Image 1 (tube, rainbow, N blue to C red):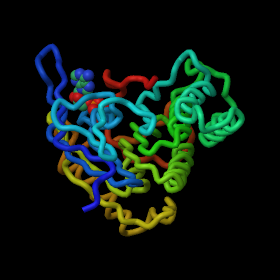
Image 2 (cartoon, protein in one colour):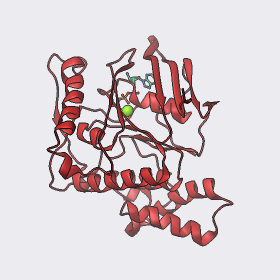
Image 3 (tube, rainbow, N blue to C red):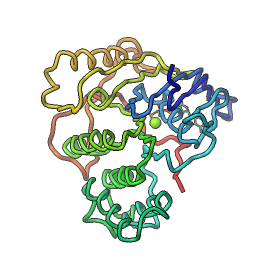
Image 4 (cartoon, rainbow, N blue to C red):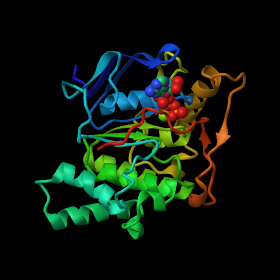
Length: 301
Ligand SMILES: Nc1ncnc2c1ncn2[C@@H]1O[C@H](COP(=O)(O)OP(=O)(O)OP(=O)(O)O)[C@@H](O)[C@H]1O
Ligand SMILES: [Mg+2]
């Protein structure tokens, strides 16, 4: 059998808390091939960001581990770009400088000064942020900051792209535009992607495989669903496609019938609300209820 590009084996994650250890993850196993697009979906607090942070090298598993191309992951590295749930920009740097920092880290020697500048502008234009190059994170909206975080990650041409709810704070039109761009870029770069999302339609549209996590504590992989839809994918054409609808139903059934929202008797759905300053009228998406930041999310240096 071909060796997987990325492999999580027997990953447990226990956090120390004032009340003793808290077992967030229990025996998570995952094999991902090069260029595969995998979505992680599950209810709020189940451990999705924890899995991502272990792959990013920001957290060490309590047991088991993560291997990338035959090497154990212990620290962050530029071949693994992260789009954080809280976008994590450097507050003292401008929009341009935030992307520049990452580009200089990866392409210090291989790109000339003008090439770097063009590449930074290209990526910021891709996320429609070219008009705010000199603004600092405190001067832009949450959705805009999220777009800068996406530009920063894509500008690194990573072999592994780790995205924690990358489109969560965006209005539906911007989200659709960036989803389409991401699909194109990912095909071009053949990057391996792990994306956390609460949006079932987003997961089915973008993924080769959807990994569904059980509720925590001691969360693990519950079910996996291979999305066998040809690419390029067109959201409008797929809306009525029976196979697409079937996949969508399968994910909804896992989330709302098999793993109801923790602490509540009834299944939960809510309508995605864009951040106020990014709001635009568009079709709502079904999402799983979510809470904002968790303490372990940290900025990359
Ligand atoms: N540093 C920490 N110390 C203690 N508990 C933690 C820590 N980080 C995460 N947890 C707990 O681990 C569990 C998983 O957290 P995680 O952030 O991975 O969930 P999530 O699936 O990403 O949730 P969400 O969808 O809300 O972002 C939660 O119960 C959380 O409270
Ligand atoms: Mg999270």
